Amino acid sequence: MPGRRAIRPVFCRTAAPVQTPDGVTFPAASGVPGRCWSGTGCAPLVLFEDETTRVEWEEVVGCGSVTGAGLPPQARGYAERLHMVGWPWRLGLSRPLWGRFCGSRHSLVWIVWEGRLNKSWCFLDGKLLRGMNVALPGLIQAEGVRLDMQLQSGLVDEPIRGALGGLRLPGPAGRFLAGRERKCTAPARLSGEFKDHGQVIHEVVEWA
Image (tube, rainbow, N blue to C red; front, side, top):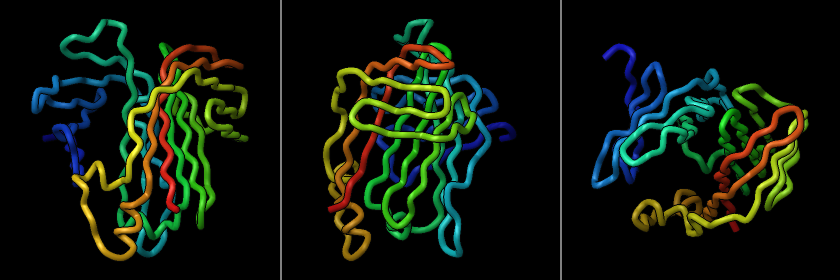
């Protein structure tokens, strides 16, 4: 259907989201109520590409309104899309970090790759910032802005295979699935040229 694009994950705990011209819709499924994210993001960005592998990231909704049953009128949210062609272990990453801040007016996103590929990106309201510094557990700095995270609450602390029903595979795929995923959320304050308060979700994956 024109103007609607299904985002089809290989593994998913909820119904597959549908990207629309206004944002993203998650249909209700298995007792989980439906949600609609509305707002603007940024154009797709190719993070890496070679003969066998391509990684494309897109901020679909940076800091938009979220509507659905039981949500207050001021609810805000963030949605992104990651499209990968090829096997993720071929990137040779040893410690990728990812996080996003969503406030009442602004969004801040950071992506860090450590390993064979050492790359980093930081976006404020979809605009690429320079000079990012990540000082875990609670500080992100970049061109003109500072993000301070407060007391963090853990969401996930398990091997990657835990989200896939304990799937076990041989060889490089098995080693990849053994990587430990840690995800947390926290209240945060954005300061500097842009000021806001909101929530952060942050994730780190490490391979021994």
